[in-house]
Image (cartoon, rainbow, N blue to C red; front, side, top):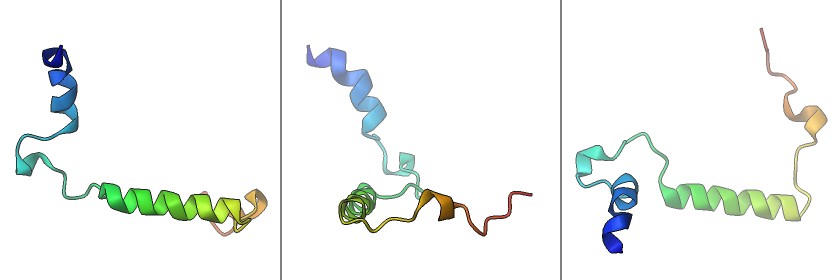
Length: 59
């Protein structure tokens, strides 16, 4: 049964250190960002949608 999971494991866990993209955001940094965003949402600290794109030039 574990052999059936090997292709999935190969996709998720690089076999060689050079296979890791140095530009990828570390998982812990992503988790911390999501925790902050969830906290902000729960406490009402959010940017209104009407202001979200204010000041961004679309041309």
